[in-house]
Length: 351
Ligand SMILES: Nc1ncnc2c1ncn2[C@@H]1O[C@H](COP(=O)(O)OP(=O)(O)O)[C@@H](O)[C@H]1O
Ligand SMILES: [Mg+2]
Image 1 (tube, rainbow, N blue to C red):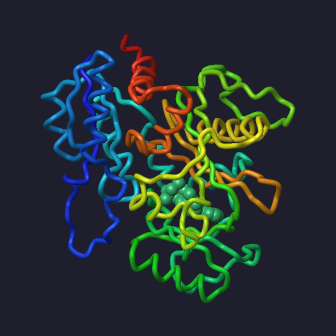
Image 2: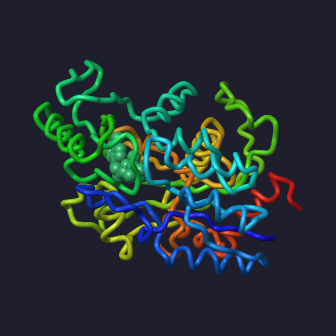
């Protein structure tokens, strides 16, 4: 099959005057693109790389791919991860992974949390701030956690994100507003372990198309493959990181990542996390692949809270969470990439 790999390379990112230094932290490196291209070629396909920007309107008709492997994070706007899928739908070209609505939703953490809350899925209580001086809702209790509403890769997340009083809250809000032109998400701070669950597949059984209301109802997850959960080993990082999966850990220390995979959790805890991850996958409309991030509340028997869903999880071989999980599950990098591709090929009935 002719496959076009679509991504946004860091080196092709537009430069803007006065932009924050972490602005393009979630874009891909050439090494990652090379690895994915090799994996797709090893799967028996012809593969070309195309930069995922407005040039696609010219490059795609020339390349005439049967399907695109989409990794585009986008450049501008609150729907940036959905731009390329929107173009592909306009041009009627199949692509891997989640579609426009899911990608735009998942980029917006408060919107995602509203959907999760509607479905009674556990996510920390929250409030969105658009101004520094907005009053804090009475049910929000310190310590709180302050982060940008629509970023990823730990952008705007540091030890200072934990705020313990009104002065710290206002300082952190001011910082975020200066640096990121978007509302701030303030959540209850969940002190505890950090676990992430990767899923590959698509829900098949009709029963799984709804989340059962009933605790006792069978939890049917047919079609989804759960990779072993990964726990970030916070004990291996400087205390200054405060047990948070910060931008420093994700970007500067990415190559010396300390983790436990499979996460040392009891079977029933794994079942619960997998179930929650599947429910998130379902209610946010994910396709083919996703990663769901959790914190386990140390003050409440490791009770899991959903932080976010990543429908475009990082695929850097060796150090992205999903790739480590796949390896721990006995999948090679090639297996992971081709599984994602084949799921999309199947969905579009291209074979
Ligand atoms: N409510 C919270 N309580 C405790 N830690 C949090 C909370 N929200 C985020 N974090 C920490 O910040 C990290 C990044 O937050 P997350 O919402 O996953 O954003 P990103 O898109 O940058 O991964 C998390 O992995 C976790 O370590
Ligand atoms: Mg995260």
